[in-house]
Length: 409
Image 1 (tube, one colour):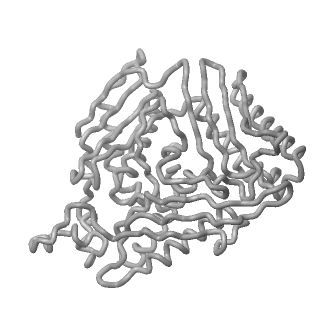
Image 2: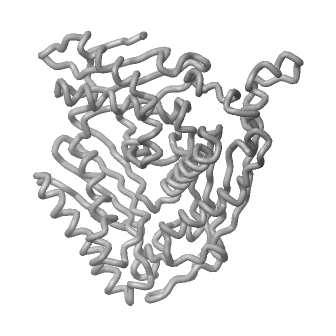
C-alpha cells in the first residue's frame, strides 16, 4: 500500500470554526432520507435476490412547502416536494422490481417518523426521477456481451454483480477522517443532542428539530449562534416564545459549564423581530415546511459536523451503495483508522484514503496519515499496521451500515 506518514500541526490552537445542521435541517433531512432509502433497498434486494443490487440515491432533494402559523396553531397549506433522484436496478434476471412504489412508500414512512403531524398523502408531493442507465463504459459492440457494464442496473443474474467476485473502486475519489474531537466540536454535538433528546423534548414539546449551530473559539473564548424553531401548537403567545428561548439558553449554559467552559457568548434566533412578530415559529419544526430546500451532501460530514479548518472532502456519503462506493466506505474507514490511531497512541491525527477507479477497493491508491507534531515520536510501522488492518476490515462496514451502526450525518 502507498502509505505516506507526515508529522505536522494538525489543528489550530488559537482559532476554530465548527458548524452543525440539526436533524430537521432540510440538508440533513435529505441526507437521512437518502440513507434510509439505500438501506431499505439493500435489505429488500438482498432478501429477495441474494445480493444488494446496484443503486445510488445520493442526489435526493427536498423542496419546501408552505404553512400558515400563528400562536397556538400551524398548518401546511402547500406540500413538501420530494425529488427521488438517482439510479437503481429495476429488474433482476428478468423479474421487474416495483421500484417506484417501494421508494415512495419508504419515503412516506420516513417523513412521518420525522414529522408525525403531517398528512403523508396531502403534505407530500413526489417527483420520481430514477434511472437505470449505466455510467459511461458500456458499449453496444458485440464483445460487450461478455462484460457486465451493459447490465449494471438490469443484471441477468448474480454473475453480473462483479463485486461478488472482487471489490473494485467505483470512482476516483477520497474519504477523510480525524480524531479526536476538539472541545468545541464536542460542545456543538452535545448541544444538539441535548435539545433534540427525548428528555428535553418531553419537557419542552415546543422545540422543533431544525436546530442550526455555528460556533467559534478564539483561545478559550467560545462564541455560539443558534437557530431554534418553535412549534406553534405549543406556543400560546410572544411571552411563551421568549420564555422558551430562555429555557434553551439556560440549558446550554449549564451544559457548557459542565464541560468547564467558562467564557461563552451565546446568541439564539438573532433574526427575531419581536415588534413585527417576525419570529422562528413553525407548524412542524423545520424550515422545509416554508420554502427552504435540502439536498444530499450539502450538510454535515459523517462525523456530524462541518469543520472547514479540518481536512475535508465534499463527498456526500448518504445514499451511496454500501458495498463498493468509495464516497461512503473510504470516508467511514478513514474515520475509523484515525480513531484507532488516537486510541493507540493518544496523538491528534488526520487520515485520507484516495481511490483510483477500477483499482481494488482494498488497495487504496494513496493513504495519507498526518500526525500532530509532538515530541514523542511513534514508530511508523505501528501506524502502518493499524492502517493495513482497518483496510482489510472495510467489507465489514457494509453490514454495520445496514444495521444502523455507522454515523453518516
